[in-house]
Image 1 (cartoon, rainbow, N blue to C red):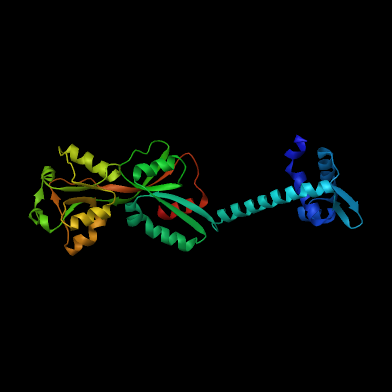
Image 2 (tube, rainbow, N blue to C red):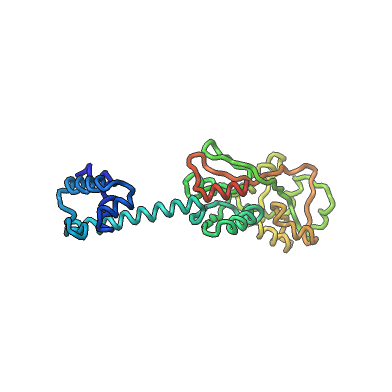
Length: 296
C-alpha cells in the first residue's frame, strides 16, 4: 500500500481515466501509450486491493470504491494544478507579493518613487510595507518576515545580511525664529547643551548615530522632547519648542521658505546612507528580486 500511495503517477493516470471515461482519451491527454495507462490502473488496483473501474462498451465506469477515491483525487490533483499555475504566474510576475521593511524616512525620501514605478509595471503584485526603524527592520529580515529592507546607517548587519548603499543622507540641526541669535554663527557642538533639544526616540539608527557623534565631541544631551517621527520634530521646531535634529529632507521645504534655519558648526556631521539589505540565508521571491533590481 505504501508503495502505491508514494507513486503519484498512478493517481494522475487514474484521474484522467475517471475524468474522461476512456483509456484512449486519457492516453492522449497524458501523451503516453494506452498499454501504459492500462498498466498503471492495474498496478493501482492491485496495490489498493479493490477494483476501481468497470470495463463497459462505452468505456470505463467507476465502481463505488472508484467514486470514493476519485472524489479525493480530483480535489487534490486540481489543487496541485492550481498551485503550479500560481507558481508560474508568480515567476511571470502576474501575481504574488513583496514584503518590505522601511522607516518613514526611507519610505518617503527614497523608496516611494520606485514603488510607484514597480506598481505601474507589475499591477498584479501586492506590496506590503512594514513600517519600522532600522533595528526592528533588520530583526524582521532575520526572522524571514520581510523579503528585504531599506534602512539608514549606521547599523550592524553581520555575516547573515548583505547591505548595499543606495543614497547619501545628511543630518542637520534646525530651529525657528525664537533662536535667530544662533543664525549665521559658527557654533561649537557643546553649545547645544544650553539649548532645548528635540530628538527622535532612542531606538532609531538616526538617534544612535547622533548620540555617538556628540559623545565623541564631548557633548552629552538630555533632550526636552523625544518624538516618534521626524515630521513631528519639524513641527515642534516650527513652534519654537527647541532645536530639532533631523535628516535634511524632512526640513527642506521650511529651510527654503525661511520658516526654519540650519545651525552651522565648526565640525562637519558625518554623512550617512540609505541601504538596501537582504538576507544571505535565502533567495527572495521573483517579485522582490525585480523590485530590488529596480532600486539598485
